[in-house]
Image (tube, rainbow, N blue to C red):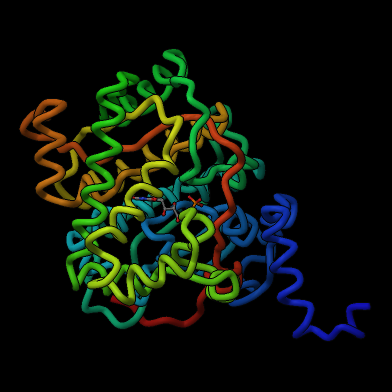
Length: 378
Ligand SMILES: Cc1cc2nc3c(=O)[nH]c(=O)nc-3n(C[C@H](O)[C@H](O)[C@H](O)COP(=O)(O)O)c2cc1C
């Protein structure tokens, strides 16, 4: 059957099946061979990466690359083709994603009795680099204590942009997440107040549209927008219209004919779709903590990684409102609404939380694309 159909025919069919069934979890973490396999006879880095590649990253850029040194040592590098110089100028949020990747790699290898220790370079991302640059040297060391999260959660955690079910998130769940945040020096505050939730959703909508009026930012984001199912399935990165809950043609029109679609009645219709898509949201949360430089961003990423897994374990979805944080005007509005953080802290994350249907699964690069060999790096 496979041969009769031919591989070219089979690939779109498999993609269609994967979409229909939301990608079976069993097939999501199968290690593949590739560069460095010979230096890691136990296959532990590949096994870890098969799970960790499902780490969330801004716009699903997946900036991580791995270079295996031995079965206990590996380098984590930043792919210069997968960065956001315009929309993440300090590189804080990309570094946050890379630090989450390290945390998830550690969770992924835990069943083998080891954990990942990282020696970070600790500088902001160099956006002029043209070859992969070193982010951290990773080593495996015997695991301490009990595992906090089952690695299967790495495969089920997702960003849910679906409507939520109209219930508020339970105080006990919120307190557990706040405690995990505190362990790494951050304060999570939440609200299930109707006025606050609606105000936050509205600010997010307004800011998203405002941001897209900026030519440089929109041009950068456009590179990560996937407007057809085939494009999403072949590139395996970026923001797929299906996950954003917008028809692909509309998303394409919004970006490619922005002067027409970004204002007037068309923009109003799109804004209404966005707000409707978030109906049933009853809880929002925001985080503050040290966020001044690379060391803080790394710690923040470790924390957010843990928070997101804990929420996934409790069946609670998270949908970040990143634009409100990165847009200076919207950030100031949020700060004046919820109160300014202490002088040595920033309000760096805002999200809606709740329960929803199972969200669509966004793609990831194949595992073999993560591993590289013989790169020169600074
Ligand atoms: C630091 C950070 C900021 C993000 N900001 C947003 C955002 O503003 N809006 C949004 O819809 N998703 C946001 N996301 C979610 C990513 O787009 C998402 O993780 C990625 O597309 C992969 O999808 P998944 O989480 O379902 O695996 C953010 C993720 C991270 C790590």
